[in-house]
Amino acid sequence: MIRNGFAALTKEYSMNVLFICKASTKIGLGHLIRSRTLATDFKLSHPNTQVEFVLIGDGNLGKLLLSVPFVTRIIDSENELRTDKKYDVIFFDLMHIDSEVFFRVKDIARITVSLSPICNMLKCVDILFNRTKYLPLESDRPKEIFAGLEYSIIQGNCEKIGAGTFEENLKSHTFPIAISMGGGDAANRTLSLLKTIKNCSVPATFWVLLGEGYQHSYNDLINEIKINTTQEIILAKTNRSMWHILKNCLLFILPGGITTYESVFAGLPSINFLEEDNNYFLIRELVENKVSYYGGIFNDENLNALNKKIESLYSNRNELMEMHVKSKHLIARDAAARIYDVLNAKLETSL
Image 1 (spheres, one colour):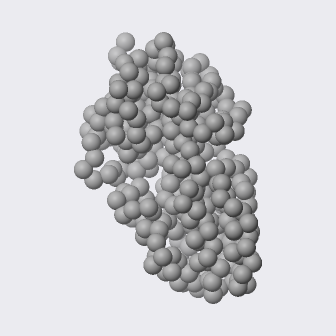
Image 2: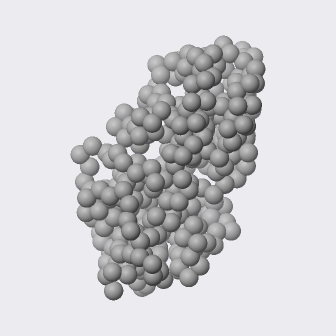
């Protein structure tokens, strides 16, 4: 059963919550960022909530959990998931987990939740919270689903771009465009994009944002932008400061992850490339609402069409303004409160 909302009870249950997520430079950092954001919101909005966080992944990602207001632990393998405690809610934010390990963990929770719409054990959790009303075709699903843009989890440092600021950006002779291929970018799509956009025929400033997990050669990027281009291309390793850069841009080129939803929240139009068409459901609702573009799967043919799209938008900037306006009230920053209220009500009624 898919629901778009839940009437919360007035009394608040003091929760004991565990987050389990997987992240690495190979599989990406999106699950970690999303879970970290939700866990932080839970703890700051409800100080009596006991929050623990387990990251299964690279130890060097611990820097992304510095100064968080909850207890954290990093393990190399899911087989290390061991605890004698019981939890009211256990969140899973991952795509795969061994079934034996899953059921061992599920046994210590009153409610199990998935934040990922793609997970091999999805049908075995109690609830899925999904940032869009669309789900993978023919996927196994849990009993209860809360799905829609109102469940989009937005980082606290993501800032809305004011209409006045966006209008001023539109007046610029140069076209300010941001690029981010994710926190890890294991396939080094950033380099492929640089080879493409440096040949764009309109004057542009490209802000190439490199995530915490980017481990490819910076020299390769630098050498690429030195050759045969008149474009201004700036490489920037960013984290908290990312939205200070993005508020000065008119377009964002993305791989269709959580940052795409943050871009809509901020009011910044985006062009998204996906690994495979089967993942189109992840951005379909945004494309249908005309606040994002789908550039197709990430291949040479679609990359070659990217410059033409940029050149078209350079000449038709009203299209970008219309997208900015349409995105204004599409996504709010209240997903954490909605999720908490659902769980609080369920825990209260089950006592």
